[in-house]
Amino acid sequence: MSRETFQYICRRLKPALEKMDTNYRVSVPLQKRVAVALWKLATNAEYRTVSHLFGVGISTACDCVKESCSSVEEILLPETIQMPNTEKLKEMALYFEHRWGLPQCVGAIDGSHIPLVAPQEYHTEYFNRKGWYSIVLQAVVDGRGLFWNVYTGQPGSLHDARVLRLSALWDLAERGQLFSQQLRSIGGQDIGHYILGDAAYPLASWLMKPFPDNGHLTQQQEVFNHKTSKARVVVENTFGRLKGRWRCLQKRNDCSLERVKSMVLTCCVLHNLCESHDEEYREEWGVPIPFSQPDLPLQPPIAETEGTGVRATLMHHLNCVADV
Picture 1 (cartoon, helix red, strand yellow):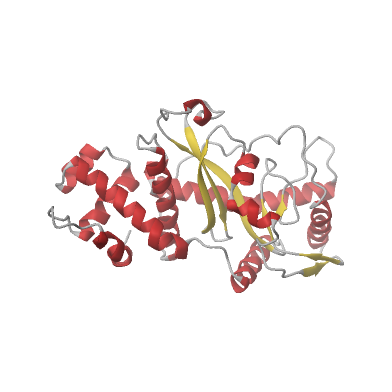
Picture 2 (cartoon, one colour):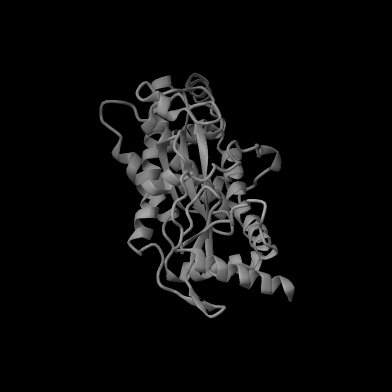
């Protein structure tokens, strides 16, 4: 992270962190507090190591991380990761169409598992299908790999589709308030904005998924699956860059569940800041992301009649474009 971005973060967090100062202790300088938190998030070093490196007590290092993450949630999260407005939706849709040929697409959704030490309560719920404990980070990203919706904290044993249904994103979509009604005529049908998901997600007019590969896909269905899969990689790449920069998300975290959730959200905010400020990213930081293999669709199958017409229209459109 450049000095300019670091100073920007310190300036923005200053009002919240200053509230936490008291007259009964010598306060650690603001920049050191933020630096301790960033170092912990970036390296996942033990608090003992962090305290030695920065010359503060272990409990002080813990407080620096807790207070800095809380301040990021209070100040930076609402303005850095937010639902796109009408103009932003248009911009995102144009980017997806220009890069991948997908009209009206404004994002891709996926889940990533964040490892943690087994919680004391309900620990079996956090044991995921790969054999370790985790919470799920559900995220929607735009075509440039910036988060515009994140939801985390659900136990790792939950299916991606179940996590979606527990999120505010699903609630907004069910009430018809996820996207503004900016319709575009495609193949004679009015199509609104939508996001892309893998086979684990339900099909809806606002959420496109691939045709199930039962060995009998038509050529047009294969073209649709191939083109949407290429675009959906953007969310997997984003998770890779997120965990490459902020390595606390790679290894088991022994903090409380609430603290882990706060750290995850903070890392998502910092990802957006670093990406939008064109901070350096080295490819060797990247790591293979567990759970890149999608969950199997829920059984029995969920009725998905709502989005079938939209998917069929987009399939024909993508095949027409491919034939040109």
